[in-house]
Image 1: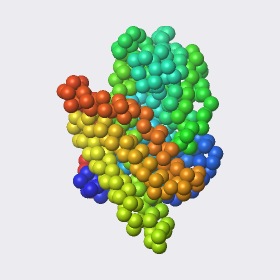
Image 2 (image 1 turned 135 degrees about the vertical axis):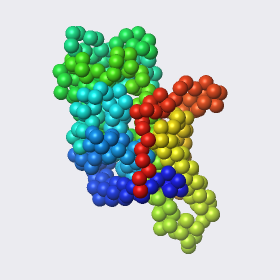
Image 3 (image 1 turned 90 degrees about the vertical axis):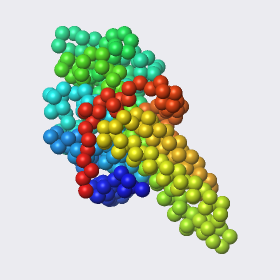
Image 4 (image 1 turned 45 degrees about the vertical axis):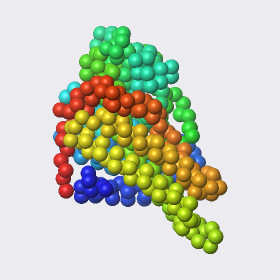
Length: 399
């Protein structure tokens, strides 16, 4: 099935990331689960592999391999550690804003740093009182001479505590044209981080609070023109957030299937492996079917994006299918494991917790269904994948 979209170069990349994940990431998981602390060193080590630059062109030191290659990197890391897969996917949101809205000077300054693993970018949109309602944000930026002054809070910011460059959307006016985007370095006066709070899953990944208290940045740090903040937020979420989270869910889903099959083959009941019992085979068959369908949706969407095709609906559907199927397979895996799946030393217990973290970002499943209903009714607006097609380019299918 992979061969429908992937090439030999994709296969080589997959082998490279898989080897790294098994040798460098997997040994760290026990400590990550026990300490629940932010993995600064491991995040940097992953960045140093150059994978954050997978969609950045060679002219800026990137790999220039595109969105399907990006999905494979995130998938293989997430298969071993959802937290580190999430770290890479969140960094890619930060890449998107610079690629599509950054000036030539901003791109020249930051993209080589990202490609080399010296800069982990983020994007900060969500606020405590507005959640996914972007137009409800209240964080504000006012112009004072050659500077902007930002005040407000952002929450659930991926890579909050390891990020080197925060892409912040704040209000500069009224209505949908009153949002603007800015690049904020963490050493700017008036910027601070909220205390890291451990969560249910994705232990090792930071997604926390950014605080702006009269935070001053130079006007040259604005991304695009005033009033383009909504476009920055939406395009990053749709063209990067949804396929990235799709890949995290796919990696976790693969791990669930692999672990459950291995468990069913090594545990015996009634004198035979669990895998030989028809009731268990039914569950394994369901998990495998859902995994195959989810992967097909994920790869098709990423492949379409690489070829600059209008594919917002495909990206939305891929996120919906992968998240829902991963959660469904997590429940099935727990049913097969029964009591063995309940201990904190059980991998499926971790996979189940991690999978729940992929549900809300870039739109819950209810939001995805609403957007797909608009597609079915013919009420969709011009897809972001079509609006930004000239910037997306067509990535070569090299062998």
